[in-house]
Amino acid sequence: MDKRIITVATTGAWVNKDLTPYVPITPEEIADEVLKCREAGAAIAHIHVRDDDGKPSMDFNKFEKTVRLIRERCDIVLNLTSSGGIGLSDDDRIKPFAELRPEMASYDAGTMNWGHSAIFENSPQFLEKLGKAMQECLVKPELEIFDAGMVYNTLYYLEKGVLKSPPHYQFVLGVPGGMAATVENLVFLKNLIPENATWSAFAIGKMHLPILYATLALGGHLRVGMEDNIYYSKGVLAKSNADFVKRARRIIKEFNSDVASPDEARQILGLKARQEG
Ligand code: ZN
Image: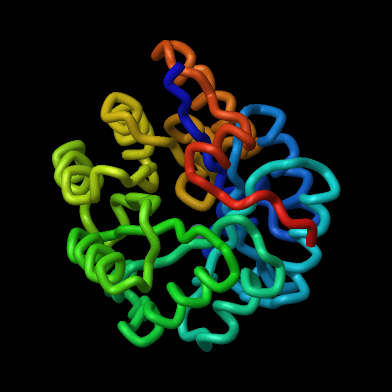
């Protein structure tokens, strides 16, 4: 049976309560939401945390608490961000996964002009350090790709041993400064990655659904959640991240595929056995 993994990205760095009152911000809110998403069919939770004012943060204590609360509640695969904001130190970005040992963490494979507003910095030096740290910690990188050059960076690092094969990619389409959310771009990116790679994709905002359907048709895994899109339909805010997960699950089933459980996702992605925090 063809199994598809649903990743949920409940929070992200930028969506706040002014944009939608339903976005989970505190560790308790995030853990509650992740449990609902797990019950709805998500196998992986991509985690960001916020400070007490709801601002983007890489605060270790917030990560520690969020991870602990989620692990107490369910068996979902944890994927911690390594880039919860702009202008953070290398150590701020590495410490959460190095200490908490999630099974996955994000690896943003290049520097870009983010949203016409800031430099999202992932220097060659940092990417080497990050790749090696993830190998040492047995954390599988989710290679986040915003532009085609980033795929070529990963091919170089695979060759150099900074990244281990088989890689797992997450194509992020529609962020201003990166590639636009078109089916043509998705097909182009997918054809650049190694044959043994696994991959997932999503687009932000209103292109979320077209790219979700295209990803399904092309054999990829799916990511949904308020980090990427807060509207369930035109002008209607999603009340919970679980609504997006339920929809993705329905679409996968209608497609005659099946939704991967966390353990099936572990198998598909070759993750190490879950470590207790
Ligand atoms: Zn993220």
